[in-house]
Length: 126
Image (cartoon, rainbow, N blue to C red; front, side):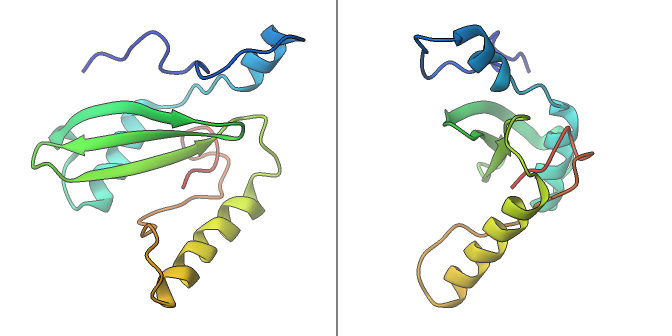
């Protein structure tokens, strides 16, 4: 599976001032193989079943990737940029909030895995 050249780069906007610094803050280099393993494990499948791994969206604080398995099942992985701090509390809070919202009956994404540990991939993921 070949990744596009801009996979780790921010490509959704421009800055008039300090553009090189803003782009560097949003450069997100991580262990793609490890994220594939985590995504596959969440779906109780081996990492070899990953069919497609693509950048779906990016914003001011996170980048979202879509991981598609050979059977058609999909998961989303949202990774904060290295410049997004503090790591631990926002990630845990967002995961808990989504679980709470789902418990009230409001449709919300199901969190299959999250890590507030800065050593997972490169930093926390949801």
